[in-house]
Structures are given as C-alpha cells and as structure tokens.
Image: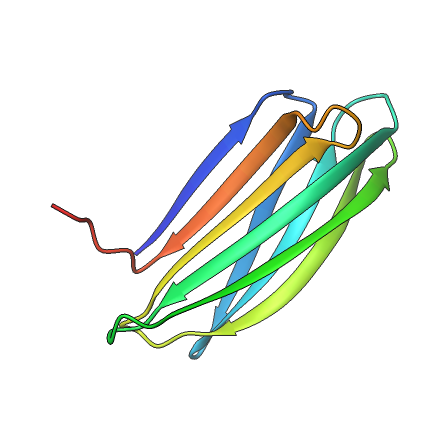
Length: 117
C-alpha cells in the first residue's frame, strides 16, 4: 500500500516525490515545480526512513540549495532503495525559502506502513 500527502503553502511552488517500483527496488526522484512568473531561491530536505520486519531502522538524508526559473521543473535528487515486501518506507520532501527558512511546500510517500492502533 502506497500513501501520498501533499501540502503547499504557496500554490505556485510544488514539492513532488516521483517513484517507480522495479522488483525489490523503489527508484525515487525528488522535484520542485515553479508555476509562478518569478525566479525562486529555495532549499530542499529529503528524508527516507526504512524499517524492516526485525525493527531495524535505516535512514537517508539529502539536502541542498537551488534556484529555479519561472514556469519550470527542477530535479533535486534521485535515490534507489532496496525494499523487502515486509519493510516499511516513509519518505518526506520539504521545500523552504532560502532566506526566511519558511516552509513553502512538502510531499510525502508511505510504502507498506502498518496502521498503529
């Protein structure tokens, strides 16, 4: 089961996690979409957390600063994660204004997450 959540403080900037499942791998591509007429200076933070059936947790964090022209899409990072069908995977992508550090947009991807009662 894959779940998505998207929140955008400014409708003209969008964080997006694209993914493709290939056998026991998930290829993840993080992108920023600028639908505005303005050039933007932003930062991104991508976090992935994988938990196996034994409860072991591994995480990956990627971050950086970037500029994005008007009406364009920019690839921020790409990663491939080996995942067993019993593993849980949570991924989060945050876009922030470079100067104010205000959250502009975020996206998330959940794979095989068991609901806690």
